[in-house]
Image (tube, rainbow, N blue to C red; front, side, top):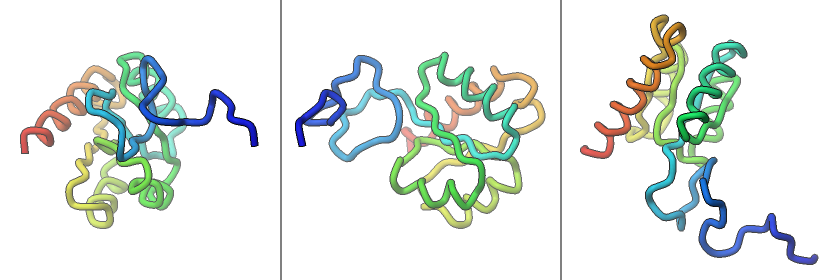
Length: 126
């Protein structure tokens, strides 16, 4: 099979890397946020805001799907509603920080971004 430019070899070739993490990826990448939820409007709006601020964003329509992919993509933080967050905290790896999306965060994306940033900073300090 001929090698195409899409095949990854060696270090990251993209100028602004996004998406899941690989074991050999260097530090300094945009934090990867996994958005979990069934509300397509809320997820789409949150994804757009986070991507504009250079967060890498992955989405999941259900808790089951999120739990299946979390080991593969290794997100820096998971954002979910209260019920989904509780289940993710119980079943996901202990080190995975989970942010509960409140009504305030649904209305004010700045509150969401602030909470994600604070959670990531706290995790890196620990």
